[in-house]
Image 1 (cartoon, one colour):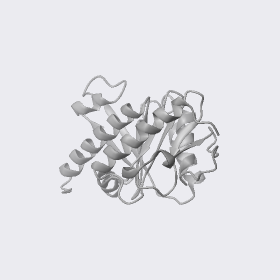
Image 2 (cartoon, one colour):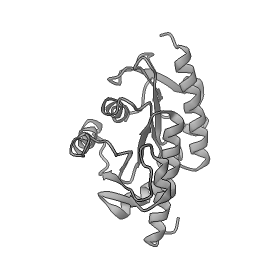
Image 3 (cartoon, helix red, strand yellow):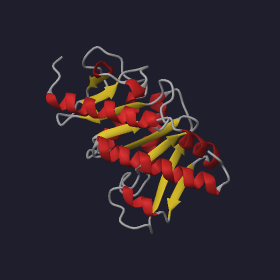
Image 4 (cartoon, helix red, strand yellow):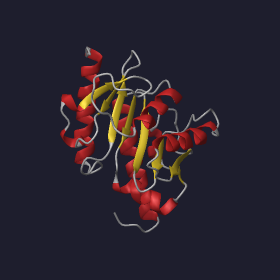
Length: 209
């Protein structure tokens, strides 16, 4: 297996993202997984079971578009949730999945979806230009059967206007958040904005976090 400059650049970005996300307390223990897509369609993704705040180069591996390992390492059990997002959204170049406290609490309180509207920070998301916007974050029941969970997410996105356009994230109940964007930095921006908006909603409902 030959790693090229694109891989090393994206691996460094994922490592830095892991440090930032860990500094926020969003990836306790060995939770979460991150990925970024190379221009040639291969995907750099975190290996299974590593603490995301202490990632090293060897903790980032390569998979193909179907999720099969290209370098003999073991990817996250949730790899299919990444590859299905890349297939759905060809413009996406990164997927970040932390296990933040706010996302977990939101999933307990709102059950099926969280609707965010009227917030200035919604303009952090590409394509949203006014606070007079509405962003829906669907919530799916946790499932150890990842193909079944991925199919449920796909079914939801199939039912949305624009084949999922306008959906920037989803939550797995009691588990964590998935968000995706056109680069690692853009996806980090989405993640930070979502956590703030989740905190706002939780406090409106009297949840102290």
